[in-house]
Image 1: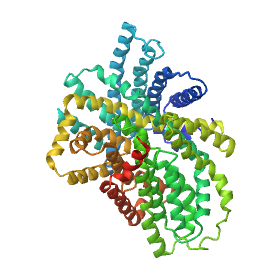
Image 2: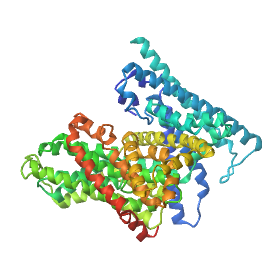
Image 3: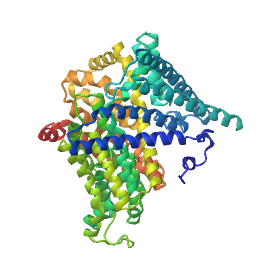
Image 4: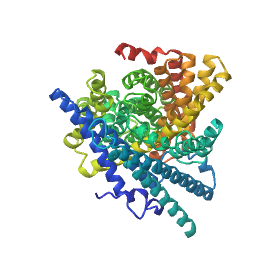
Length: 171
Length: 428
């Protein structure tokens, strides 16, 4: 990889976390590639034989969940998630910075909540030994990633808050 | 509590909080305060995402991005230029047609607009087109991508309103999309005639290539929509499968035919398309929390009823909704607008007995127009950045294009068959 993601940000220190976002990038790319490969294999197998491995559907949609949460975590590092920035952009730079910090802190609160209730959800899957409908593996193998990756999003949003606060004191 | 739900969301939205956060947090707080079952905060995030039809979204984004990075736009421009020849307004026609064609491969506007702007702005400028006009035209033509199938917007619409299928929506978007694109020809011809843009010999650097040579190079790109739409039409593929086939076809064209794609670039395409998909799908996930809170409270029906008390005149209501959506479309992308407004609008559509497929097309046309209406237009932002001009330079031109496409919108609103004829004929 000669093309560092950091290079594209024009060296803005706000966009450069201490822990590189290579992990999020690689995980999202792998999830995307697997979704394509599994679906393509499904098409090929269906044409060559009568067999169908439609049960892989549950794994594909699980990958979709992983892709979303991991990709969004990476996007929060550079605050590239979709928002209406028209009105905020009319404010002075100081206010804009505080609005961004507030928005990110609310993001931290939300995803800590998702992680907390998600963890209880996983505990239920574990306690009752729920298995997945298609492949038949324990359901918690899938559901555990919801709280785990929600924590990752909260961490990435918090990391940006820290960088924003630091950049303020340096000014 | 209904008021708190909507007002809380609106405040966070205007303050510039991430849309996903605004929807999710307000929804989650209402769920906790009203004791609607706190576990649903987590389960809704998971279940909103874990849907098979939604798989089509990231894969269509990936397919579009592969064709864009492989360099299909330049080959198409060469072919259509050779086809149209050198005459007044010709390059404007080329820009419109190529944008529409790319819309048949990818499902989102800004990327198409950027690709075409990069290829066409220099030659259009040499032929006398002002950069303000070229940027406006490419931004406007690029916006048809969400109407011309495949369309990310329609995939999301179908996920939210499962009674209308993706193939039906794709078919319904075809004629209105073409109409929206062709409507731009009117101002293009008028201006080109008046200001003598692109007259023969105005660009001495132009290299005349034979039609056949350019067709041969462009044919790989031309085949892409045929594969995608053909596969869907025959019922051989689900939308997701059609998108995946397009991805592998794009990889073949990029690695074997054009040789513009190596492993490093392939990895970058995967990363970038995953991130663009993820930010859209995070909103879908968090909108799930908001929708759970809103529907359990009966908030959406309540707001829909408020709307219905404003007027019982069908045409007035439709006009009001269109205006509301146009403004929303200026501020946000189609997916986000659908997620916010559909829970409220679906009861209104049902109350008037409007056709849901037709309404989906009208809604998406508004989103397309919003994408290039200043001052907040995403597409225009992209093309003016490529041109290196400010958005104020486009205003005198782009408003005519907005007006033209509003004309196309009015036609589809007045004659629903423009949207509904094709899906009817195809039997969806």
